[in-house]
Length: 372
Image (tube, rainbow, N blue to C red; front, side, top):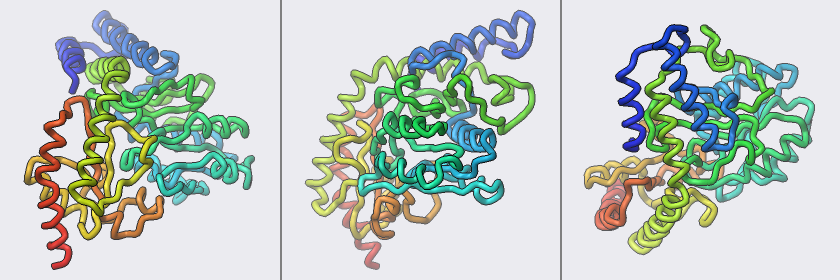
């Protein structure tokens, strides 16, 4: 966590009060919550009234996809990219399994990008039956950045609400809610140096999704529940810092990422870089290692102090190929033999040195294990 987030949370944890209460302590907490709402809105080009606090990205995605579908129940189709995080894909599938939705997975190219003409063609098959569209801003596995503004404009040409999961983008890419054209945008705290367990759905005024959970009517009666003021304060501090520092951090991470890619390719000549080679998150490098099982290689690197991922951390432990790579056209073996290296604000050239020091031997050992 960023020091600013820790400080903001610690200060708020010293206080008592419920932001929904009318007494003095409650009003003080409410002030903290509303100031945090204003901070997040200002940093991300939104109005304060458009910030709906949630327990994180998963809840925000569920609220956007289920809520917007239910709000437009006379329409059955949900258009969603085939490379979304499971926090978006699984709610869409749930709607298909039990709520009468017809889910169309938008195909992507070999870099994981949804082309505008692909979305337009999908809409025009039956535009009057599309309830909502969801395409993430940047992919959590391979780092490819989507043409969100263009896709949102196509959705609006047909009067369809557009949601984007920007969990990976905030703090690494320029993100403006008003400038994006999106009607709903997901972000979360722990991806930007804030606490886990808190996030937000930026929700355009005039758009009212059906609530996923009911109770006290908090958050525009869209998301009931007692607000976690300490987490919200830490979240707002992290958003403010991440957006403010992005112009300095992103170029540093991109340079470090390019050095990592160059040296990994030199150390393992047959490695394959996944995702767009240029238009990708500055802190993301994703590779397929032929002849390796990703899980085995991950554990070998972990034993040497290098922490990486075989895909989304939320689906770790599930022995199946990455749905993202399969959608991009990779075969199952390549999808299973892939690793994601993520750089953040604490990453240094020494981290890249350590990876290169241990990677060749780990790959060789993983390949021998695979042959065995």
